[in-house]
Amino acid sequence: LGNAVGNSLEVREAIDTLHGSGPQDFREHCLTVAAHMLMLGMRAKSMEAARALAEGTIADGRALKKFRALVHAQGGDAAFVDDPGRPPRAQFIEMVNAPRSGWLARVQARAVGEAAAFLGAGRARKGDPIDHAVGVVIHHKVGERIEAGEALFIIHANDEERLAQARQQVLSAHEWSAAAVNPLPLFYGFEGRRGHSQEQGAHG
Image 1 (cartoon, rainbow, N blue to C red):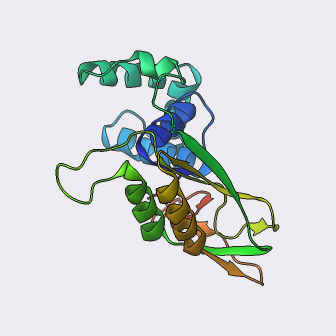
Image 2 (cartoon, rainbow, N blue to C red; image 1 turned 45 degrees about the horizontal axis):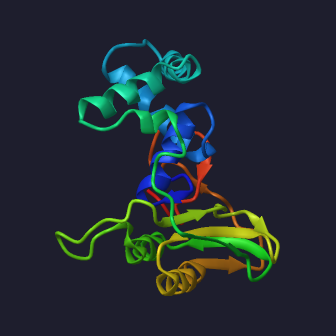
């Protein structure tokens, strides 16, 4: 869900969503799940009312305020929530363009995740250090028509050799079709599902 794979990149995406922007599929997923949680907690009498309540907490800033409180409660520096320049940034940031035109048929989530882990965003073994700055930002969803040369994804890396290998791995994770492809549903086997997503699926 969303576009980002990597620690600081995902946090920025979450903060953008709490500000009322962020990727549409990620926002839709969060609002739908929040509405169900509000119904389970008996805070609303209908899904429509629950969703409106969830949307209202974003619109009036209460959701962002609660996120700050959660960061503080866990011993984090809440200043990072309000200053997008505070989180670590990678030394090398490279935009990779689409090598061909066509419809995006699939993005293999595992391959994208493994590429991010190879960059340092995850651990191969317990105790391995985590590089919070590195990762991948995927720009397109299954079913989208993409033209050759259009921005496809961004690699954030702190090692040029690892960047080159991750680039090829993420490129290979994108599968193409010469014919139109339907977008994938945001939810599977779920009543009242809304919208579509890419669980190609990159970031579930």
